[in-house]
Every structure is written in structure tokens, then in C-alpha cells.
Image (tube, rainbow, N blue to C red):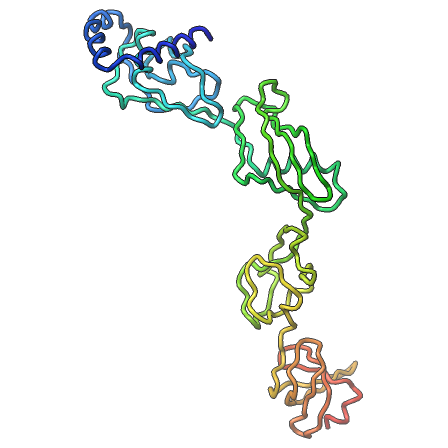
Length: 334
């Protein structure tokens, strides 16, 4: 079979080298004898086909070839690749198998694509991370390959996956190189050299939307993202408790680390606004109206003037327009 495929390739080259006028004249002189040699029903050219294996069969090129459909005619392209076969080569194949077909023009071509299993860059990086695990100093790591568009195509029949070989990892600089063998365990496997960096990563909360100054940040405004630990600011927020219920001092960008200096407790009591001041006893709760002389966030102590007695007290902000007075200041409120 290999000899036959090689002969077909040589024949295609020789045929392609014949000038068009000579080939046409020769074809005209032999047309009658060629037509007599044709067998079977007229066949139709397939404009395209997808093959799984290493060989292209006659049935991949032509329809209605009957028992000849499984005859091999050429080697398939590499997995994930495609090849275009022109009119002259196709005519040689048809003549060899005595098919009732000849090209109508040089535009009669067939595109053959080889099906494949795709191994993505993310899958390769994960395999490298597993291999690096034995050499790491601990912590949460991530691998970033230099070739961000890398992907491998394996035969659909392959069950070997990929293998990491010749790994060279510098713990200090984080740089690494390796050989990716695919499919693993196959003596004819492709060997791809890859390089990249190994990063120490951490998860931080980031905004899922633009949050304007003064808006309250809720848990639904937050998502967790893995980032390079070396690029996280030292004062970055790292927990939900530090972020939920706070307000930005200025607008926060989507997807960026939030610094502690960029947020503050929201102002629940505005300066010169009316507030309800209260004091609680085990069996009762007293309230009065006051005027805030200071602005205050949750838990902050502000000065409040009783609007009725004009007395000043210190009260702790407990909510929007709400402040709690200690029992020892009750006399000042009356």
C-alpha cells in the first residue's frame, strides 16, 4: 500500500509537469480508449471531507464508488490540519480506479481535513503545574506559557494524553522550560518545547461592576479572582468583611484589586441632619430628636444636640439617621 501511495504521488508530479496543450492533445487522442476502460456508474466529486485516520480513502474523494470506497489513495494531513487536492491529481486517481469522472475545470478540488483531539493551552499549563508541584516551595502556584495561543492536535484515536519531559524550573526566578510529548507513550509522538513562568498566586475580591463614590458595596458586587501575588498592593482588601457594607472614596474599577485607602465606612448621618437619639434600658427604650453636629459612619461617635433641651451629648451612630446615647448622658438629654 505504501508503494502504491508513493507511485500515485510521483504520477501526480509528472502529470503536473506536462504543458496544458500537450496534456490536452494527449487526452483527446486517448479519450475513446479511456472511456471504454471506465467501469461502474458515474461518480461525483466530494468538495470536502473530514477523515479520522492516517489514510485518505477513495470514498472520501468521490461519491458512489461502491466496493472501491475503502481503497486508500493518500496519507491524510496531520491532525487538525487540512490539505487541498487539485483537479489533475484527482483525475489521475479516477483513471487508476477506472472511475467515470473527469474534471470540468481546474477549479474542481477537494479539501480533506483531519479530525483531532484538541489539547488547549490551559490543559498544558495544568499538566506543567502538576509536574512542577514536586519542585515547588509550597503555596498556590500558576503556570503562564509564553505562547498564549498554543494548542496541540492529537489523533482522535489517541488515548495517551500528554506528558511533561525534561522539565527545568528555577524556583528563584520562576522561569521554566519543558518538552511536551503528545501523545504520551507513542514512539512517533510530537515533542514540543515550551517555556514560561511560574507565578505565586492568591485570590482577592474584585468588583464585578463600576461602583461609584458613596455607593454601598454588597456581596453581589464582588467576585473572587486569582492574580499574581507579586502584583497585589500591600494594602489590598483580601476578605469580604473588609469590603461588604463599605463605600468607595472614589469610583472603583471592574476587576481591579481594591485598596483599603480607597474605601471607607459609608456616612449614615450627615452633618446638620436630624437624627433619632435613643437610650435603652432592660425594660424600656427612650427616644428623642436631635441635630447632628458631625457627620458619622456606622460605629462612629458624633456630637448631637437635643432639639428640645439644646443640650449636647455624644452618641454612637447605629444606622441611617440613628444614634445611641449611653445611659450616663440621659440627664443631659432632658
